[in-house]
Length: 92
Image (cartoon, rainbow, N blue to C red; front, side):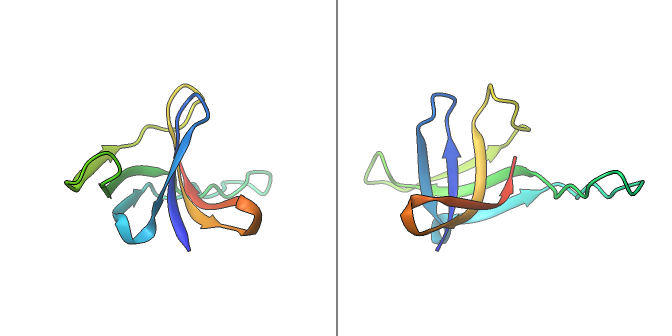
């Protein structure tokens, strides 16, 4: 099953199941201009998801996501594997 994983700067994280994720916006990929450069997949730039964790009422969270630099939250979309490992398809 796929999840949106949001990791805070202190290392704590939440896993939001894909059926609660309404939209993930992704920037265009960076194509290599020379053989030495690597293909870089597009990064997550915005997410919209349903959040019902802290209250009985469901809240729609619409978040603009900055590029991850270690001082902000990390957003990843991917698959939770056996043993609790997370394999991201997309990230900021």
